[in-house]
Structure formats: structure tokens, C-alpha cells
Length: 568
Image (cartoon, rainbow, N blue to C red):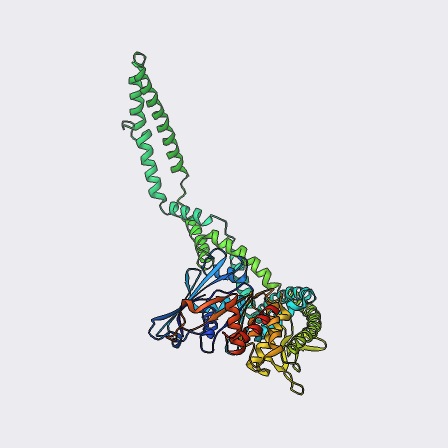
């Protein structure tokens, strides 16, 4: 991370180890700004008071390595972000006026997007931070992962039956709650289909009738025009002296036939005139037949108009033309068949729903049994861890409950509420000392105790929780000596399967770190780029000496610091 103008930090770079990183320094040196910076990158609330006095804004930039198939990477790419060589670049800017901006993979995004990714990237444990395992859903998910195949098998079967039951229930509710509407729809369809059946329209009939009506309505004019055209082409028997086109063309052809032998070009023209004459005679014959066949019967016209009116009544209700009316009738008949089968379908769906609810109850019981068995093993393991973390009398347990619901499924003789993951409400409980009643861990532990409980939980769950990074703040509150050594040992164990970052005052914890970062102020009270540095060799022994005895330059203090580091 790079941090600029945030609190006491002017400009600093924090390099975290892939394993266990301890952040140390004097009280007030700015160690908590590391936690605050990570919180901002994870979508935490922005506060103008965080901006360094005199600066326009505070900026935190982070580079988080994520596999391309990880949930966070997939969600980021859906938001338009791009991975940079397998890493996700995140930046957060907070202005002195309190405005906040976020960027993810080179793209501006809502701050809520960072919070959405947070659960899959970093688990923060501290008094003032969001703590993933305090969420009941996360506790159940973690327990299920801890249980392994014993829960995964029945959970997969349960989830499939649950999805099917939801689909069946939705369809059944639609049919039964909309019974009146569906009955009305069926009546309307039946009436419309009867109307169409009574008329019996044919595809294209409306076009044919329109043409026929146009012809019958102008029969006299059409007959007169055809007769006149025929006379012009073939002559009028009542006027033998009249000149017609066929006679003129025949004369032209005779004129050319007399000389066509003398010029092939003229012979070709004569042939074409002969074709014209044939065409004129054909057209004249068709005109004569058209005039003879033309029906000017007013009764036929009335019948055509009556038929067109019947078709228009259908197209006004069911489609823009007869073809559309026929298509509506086909679809309506299929829909009516479906609606008429409602009673039979309701019976089928009801039987299937009842069978699925019974199956779901059995699978839910198997899930509860598997979770109960895993919870006992989990509680014993965490309680054993707490005994070594200065909480020897603390006891951890799981409350696995179900809620009565008359609309639920039957499990163990009770009708209980159910959801996509079963019927169980899973909650982690803590009794910090003998005689204390088990209470939810968020309420049953102080800040320091809570961090140790979370550490114990994370150690037990190591390898089962997909979160790649853990940040512990105040995990060492109120402990020292041997208990502090055990905290450091367990953090190191957790760091074998995940990245661990710890802000600590205890040398026993810091000694176990793969990398130790020192945060220190300059003379003017700020933390600059050189104020966050990686400690190695003698520098690390010197800082552990300061943490042990407050005497970093004392040879007497350096000896136990070196021994502590070697032991760790």
C-alpha cells in the first residue's frame, strides 16, 4: 500500500509479506493508520478528519494479488476493472471536504463496490472494524466448510430440491391465485374462437374479395373500356369502313413482304411486324373474352361485401388481416387447452410440492445432524486454542436453532422455516469464564478477548475459509508472557495458509513474523516515506529490545530480544 496525507502519515509505502507481517512502533506513531488505510481500500467510511492538516486530500493505493478465477477478480472484471499482471489495483481518495472517490483496476467505481469485494479479500479483526465471522451467514458457511463432505453432499441435494420446490410453488401460486383471471381469459378465448369458427376465414381471402369487389363495382366501365379497346385493335363489325390496328399492321407487313427478298435487314423488320400482328390478335381475343365474361351481377357484389364485412369484424378484434386472425386462433386454441387443464395441473403440482417438502425435510435433518456433529468438533478445537491464549476458562459452542413456521417443512416432528441452505440458524457462542452463560461472541467478549477468539477460530478454520488475507488489531490486548508467545505461534501457523497482518505492541508476537515493519515519526511529528521500513538483522533485534524493555540500545535488553527471535 502507498499512503499519502492520511492522519500523521505524510507519504509512506507499506510492503507486506506473503506470510506473517507484524507492524510495530511507539504508541501514537501511526500504526493504526495502516489498519485505517486498509479499511478505506475495502470500502470503509470516509472521514474528512482523516486528511492530514494542510493537505487537499488523502490517498491510499493498494495492489492486491488475486487469482484470475477468484470471486473478487470475476466481480471486478464484471464492473469493468482490469487485472494488472495478476493483481488488482485499488485506490481511494478522501478530500478535506469529506468527498470520497474510488478506483478499481483503472476504472472509477462506487465505493460500495469496494465493500462488496471486501469479504472475499480481507478479514479484519479488531474492536472498530467489520468482522466477517461475526455475521451469522458467514458462521454457517464456515461451519459447513469445516464439516467438509459430510455437509457438502446433503447440502447439494437439498439445494437442488429447494430450487425445484420454489419453481413448483411459484407455478402453483400463479394458477390458484389467478384462478378467476384465468377463467375469464378462458371464456374470452372461447368466445373469440367461436366467432372465428363461425366465419371460417381462408388465408388470403380478404385480398381476393377486395379485388373482386373493386371489379364488380366498376363492371360497366370495365366492359365499355374492353369493348372500345377491342374495336381499336380488331375493328368494329358495325363499322366496316373503320380503320383498326390489326388492319394497319397487316398492310405494313404486306408492303415489306413484297421487297424483303432484296435486303436481309428489311426482312428482319418484316418478321418483327408479323410478331406485332400476332400479339395484337391475341390481345384482341382476350379483350373480347374479358368483356363477355365480366359479371355485373349486383347480387354477387352484395354477397362479396357481406363476406368482407364479416372478415372485417374479425380483423378489428383479432388481427390486422385474415392471416393474423388465423394465427391468433391457433395460439388461442393452444392457450385454451392449457387453461382448461388447470384443475388437472393443480393436482399434479400439489402432489409434487408435497413430495418435495417431505424430501426437503429429510435432507434438512441430515444437514442439521452433520452440522451438529461438526460443531461439537469445532467447539472443542477452538476451546483448546483459547486455553493457550490466556483464556483457559473460556468455552466456545455453537447454537444450532430452527424457527417454528406453519408454512415451513417438517423436521423432527416440528414444522420449521427453511431457506436455500437448510433450516438451521447457526450462531457461535462464548462463555468467557465458568458460570457465565454462553452468549453470541459479538456480545460475550471484550475487544481483546474477541480478537483472540477470532484468532482461535481462524486457526481452526485455516484452509477452509477462502479469504486470503487476515488483519488483526489488538489481538494481544491484555495478555503477555507465555500467552503472548502462544498468540505469536498461532499467527505463524495461520500464516502458512494465508497472509496475516498484525498490529502489535508485544515482542513475543512480533518475533514470529516473517517480516517486521516499524512505523516511526520524524521530528516534526509526521510519518514520511522513510518512516515505514522493513526491519532486518540488528535493526529488528533493536526494535524487539525497545518493545521488551524500552531500552533499544541496552546490551542487557538485546540479549533476550535475540533469544526471543531465535526461539520464534
